[in-house]
Amino acid sequence: MKKILIPFIILLFSFISCKGEEKGKTTEPMKAIILFKTGSVKVSSKNTRKGDIITEGQEIVTGNKSFCDLQIISPKTEVTFRIKANSKLTFKHLNEKEQILLHKGKAVFSVNKQNGDFQYSTPAAVAGVRGTKFELSVDDNKSSSLKVIESKVSYKVRVKEIEALSDSNQKHPAIQKVKQFIDENELVLGEAETITIDKSKSDKILKVAKLEKIISNPSDKKLNKALDEIKTDELSQNLSQIKKEDLSKIEKISDKDLEESLEETKELEPVSESKLDKESIQKAVESRNNEIQDKLIKRLSETHNKRAQTIILNNGEKIRGIIGDTRHKDKYILITPNGTKEFSKNEVKNIEF
Image 1 (cartoon, one colour):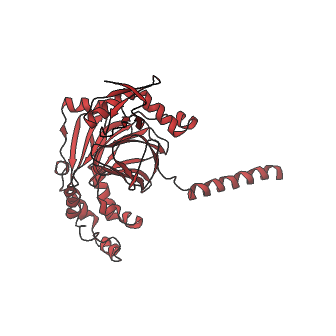
Image 2 (cartoon, rainbow, N blue to C red):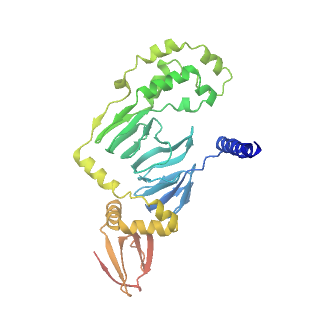
Image 3 (cartoon, rainbow, N blue to C red):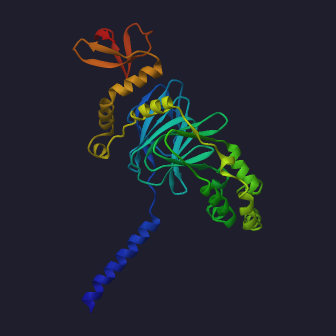
């Protein structure tokens, strides 16, 4: 009997231990690597370079005639994206989801494989995807636009005031009714479709639900009492007055726009998981950029409005890129897919277009 009980007790303790670990496990912070950049790209006000690792919560800001390509590597994914000029983006965990948040400007996303529950957010809306290519943009008035380049993307109104509530208040039946309404009015956009959602849409939901004043101060101790006084049946009836077409209007983009966007996403090749495991990040990223060198040089040429050139060194080595600031009398500055390089004019034998 003892021989039977001992293995059973060991198994029972192992199970309890595993459950305890699962309950108390911590979420790994999100991380991304810079695959490629040009111009002014700052992370938390500091300059960056190819191969840098960015951790969740850090703010990525691009300047004029600048952009930055990144890949989420924690959790391990093949989620790559380009932050375009004059943009600001962060990523972090929010409500147990991995959230990439575009605060202003534009970003293009290529999602091949994602491990985790990702949200792609703007101040006014939230996009959900599984495997697709799309662009998000936020204008100066905080209006948010989605453009689907390939496959399908779901899009719904984001109500930041509800996100700011405590977990217990978010579980309140009245708030749950509003969240259910938002989910039910989610739209699914197909290829070559676009939509714009502004802050007035979330304001309208709160106003019709008569929650506008109640949740304006989420730390208010009277909030629970105020929520308890709301009749959920009446709330549902009020919300039913809002139609999908009141929240958004889907439009088509031109064939030319779609073709150009598809070409751009081809530059967002991820570094494979096996390469990241076997090689250093710098080496893996450099190898990736060499493989798509022609595409990246073409993009650099368009960004800087200059023709690509090849510098030929005295030793015969050839380096292709965009010659930057030409005011230097004694050196050449060459912008390449693997960073900006400087060469003394004495090192250079010839320059070819």
